[in-house]
Length: 389
Image (cartoon, rainbow, N blue to C red):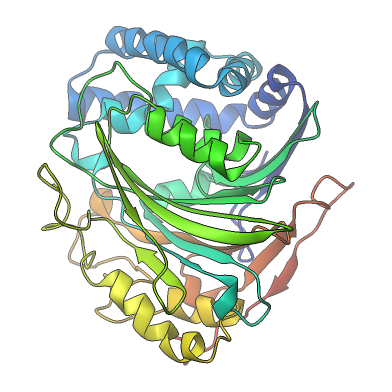
């Protein structure tokens, strides 16, 4: 697969079959990207966490055992991915636990995202919408891609992901949607538990919303993270935001205006120290800024993808804005940008994605029921408006 990023979204990889077959086909198509990502993160593990490769392998083997007990489908997919990419499976499991292995390393701590959900009672089409800006290093923009999977049961998912991994923000054929935000607490440590990226994929495997919530809340978590969750079926739709930490979960629901938004800090009070609230760029204001940008549309119960896109392109406090840009005063290795923006319509099975700078690029919209067609192509829409920022 070519790693080239398109102006109308990232490349698409489509795999079908058993979990092992899907993983092997994914690994085969992305082998060069996986090798490059492993080379990069083995260096990060060494330089930032002091972990030699044999220690990384040991940790990866342990996380593989944990994954088999937590989510056997993910475990089978990742072993297949390793085989297809021609790498040892313990390295793939370690890659999926990069946040946990890099505890205390600066490289794992600078991600910053803005996520939101709007109930159908306040949208123009009457359907739940979930959205996010994913802020991370420019390098990850160049290597990330959309992954469409359909297993031998017919269960399908479409998600943004990175090489060697299976999920970030996405939707499933059971009407679930998930977006992810980094959180960091002083409880984050240890290797004897479920890594954050396994939690993300578990949502996309869930047969229904209640099962997804049970899986997330009952997992033995060893790191913090935020999940903006939405679900829609023929009986209605709901959204909930989960702040997760080892031994803790916090919950936020949509307000009277139909909106719930989140960034990279825990909503106080919490029974531990939040290590991001005082240092993450604009995190304390980004949820409020999104609410202000959507206020008129929320009041009119007319929020649509265009209104959300305009909010995700906001430039207040540039370059550390909701639409985040490179900072000329920051070293290249420490740069963080909005890599991609996503707008998810779980009832329609629609994922729309724009490449950063989001203010300069349109959205590419993919239909989960048609992405498995021969030679699928997205619908390009939501061209940037100079007034959006």
